Image 1 (tube, rainbow, N blue to C red):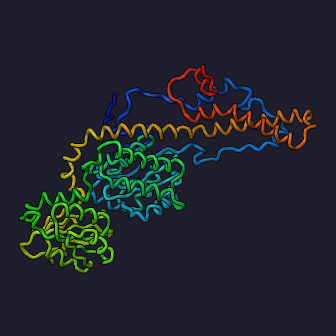
Image 2: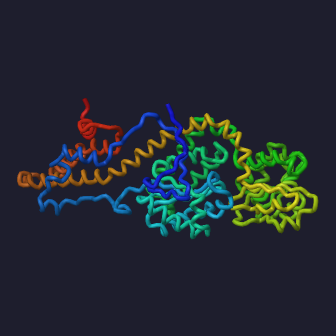
Image 3: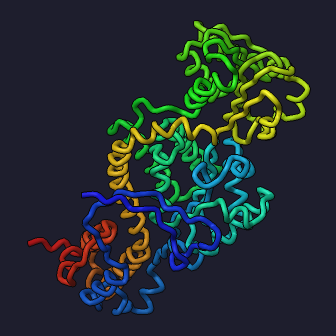
Length: 510
């Protein structure tokens, strides 16, 4: 059986600020049987009870041996060696309008620079990665101190965006620990997208993983693993469910919106409209594909460089594509019926004053902006005859798409739940790394001490024989410790008795 958990607000006890900020938890399908994992202290106590004078250091080696034995201690992490936990701070089409999202948007080539700067400004954050798309801006972090990280990151975002702190609290969501991991898995699977099941977000999460794990990236062991799991989970959902079948993208939703509103906005059917696309990137390529599928045979394509637009035009031999430079934008606004914009500009290339001069009296013009930051001012709607739309206006188009995919969403979340359990189990084993290091160090100290005691009886051995003794004693120690270390890494859940713990630690089967 599966239970769909409702949206909940995380409390201050979980280390999150509630206040005016939104702590949004994605819906999750979980197995009805609850599992309680053994705490690290339980394992240590049980181990100490059984191995009191063996591996816990209760029997200290002689001082002479202590000086000879090299003990490798686990590396210290920030905040006193406390293992970091995932934390996501961000906003999306669910929580913020496009005018807020564009203030925080980061272009993909700058993702690593932004995450590096964040680590410099936020000492409480150990790892960081930026995921910024037209519909979301998310900082995926790893921190041992959630409260401190939130404070540091909020200061960073206020400085970077220029938005008041209260405005950020009103629009941001924050998720920590398991909820942060679950959110990223849903994002990668397309379940949190404006268009459920759309495939572009998976490539964007994959790009986030690639950049974050590059030499100049800011992902470490935990975040690198989480992003990798998210990419794998997104692929699995699309291959094992029907979530992506018949799914529409932002570009296809824009084409659908134009078709739906054409009669009202232009006073003519979409098939009779003259069309212009500004920009020759990936979104424009997808837009061309969907417009061509709706019967478009002629289009003007404006771009700064003609090489790229001509290369794109060559991919559509059945469509008459007129490749022009950006200097023709004014002419396109004055003569075309519908203009789509999808450029990398970080400012509005179409403004109200511009249209007031260019659009003839009585002319109707439809503008559809699928860029973030926006390319078209919202105030363009104030110009008589102009109807301007942005990515937030696509919600009405995709509503029926989401309703038809509810069953697929449940199937996808079932698969994601198993991926999440795997990641969380792996992460919990990081708590045991210091314990494993201590076990190995204490065992090695005891081995060396015992060899020292027996040194007088081993004087008759040559160098080769002594090497064999060394190998043999080390092998015995490694084999004794193998089962306890494997058991700790598995992090076996459930309420276990001391006897069961000991049997698991030393692999004492029936």
